[in-house]
Structures are given as structure tokens and as C-alpha cells.
Length: 260
Image 1: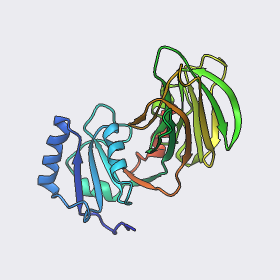
Image 2: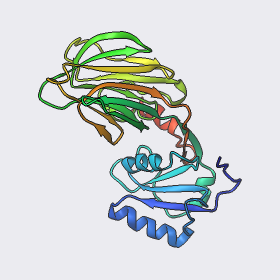
Image 3: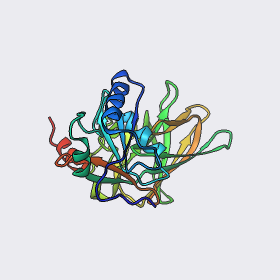
Image 4: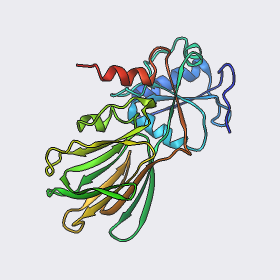
């Protein structure tokens, strides 16, 4: 198991394919050097939120913290970019520990698919017709039929992403709950979703799957034509993110609730 050392000096820089991210990577390596992945104490990700998710997925097997700097279009999960004082910023940074979701999906051919999601697992209709979903929590049917464009289960860290755009609740990181949010619900029209204990196991069954096909998406991994999807928090995986002092992920999530 990786254990952080008292003072971080060895950094491994990685960047998205955006020109500004690649330029930043070259500049930072010239100034701070480039440690090999197995020797680095911290991984510095240069890009946007999408690239941060990619970097988290690539580092599922270790506990090296990831410090992001925004060189993309969206940067909620990133720190501000600056070449100056990087080691001091990283050593003073606040840590957020993220537990992702595990998705287990079965498609119409009986094939099984597994994936991990940092933000959310979403179910989306594939055609012009609405999806019809049956939703069970811990093996008990809670909603026999939901007609909708889709639905999602979001982690606290992901509650400010797609979940928020779908009018789901923003969840504090230490709340130990998950958001179950419908996407453009048609019937029951007034259902706005639910907050679930982080230990809950959510099952979606796709009704009329041949007529109303549905895809399941775990972050950027998509499975089409699913018939059943199971989602649960994976407490065996802990991902570590670093944020500048005073700009922790908890603070950003809280501030987002008061933005107008």
C-alpha cells in the first residue's frame, strides 16, 4: 500500500491532448522534473474534469493522490493553474477521499459488463421513445414503472455534475448518501428522485427492452441494449484527490449550493 511521505518532491505530470495542457506539461516538467509513475509521490493531472476522471480511472490500483490543474473547459475538480510554488501548494493541500460506484450490467444478449464510476451511473434511452424502468432498492421494488428519458445514481463527488443538470440534489461529501435522480420523468410526473444510504444496492430493470432500448453509462464507459443494471458503492476502492488549502472539494460542493 502506498503511504505518502512527509514532504512531496517527486511529481509525475500527465496531460490531456489539448494544446494548452501539453504546453503546461512541458513547462512544469522543465521546472520540477518528471518522476516515473512508480516513484512519484503525487500525480499532477493537467486538463479538465473529463481528464481528471480518466486519470482517476487509470490509477484505481494505487493510492497515490492526484492533484489536478485546470487546462480544460470545465474545472470543478481541478485547482487553478500556476507554475509558481507548486510543491508548496501540494504539500499544503487538503485531501478528499472518493469511493466510486460499481456497475454490473446485463445486455439483451446475456453478456455481463462491469465498470467503475467516480461521478455517476446513468441509464439513457436510445431511441425517440421513452424508457420504462423498474427500480428496486436492496431487492425491494420501490417504483414499478418509471417512464423517462433515463435515470442516474450519483456519488456525492458527482452530485454537482450530470446529477445537478438533471435537477438532482447536491450532496456533501461526508453525508454518506447517494442520489437517485430521474432524467426528464414523464410518469410519474411528480417523482423527483430519492436520497439513499451509501450502502444501498440499486437495481434497474428495463421494461419493454426490445421496443424501448436503453444504454447504461458509467462515467465514460457505455453498454448499449441493457436489460438489467445493478449499482452499489465500492468501499474497497479509495481514490485520493488534492485541493488547494481553503478550496477543498467539500468547500466547493458547499459553495455550489449557494451559487445563483
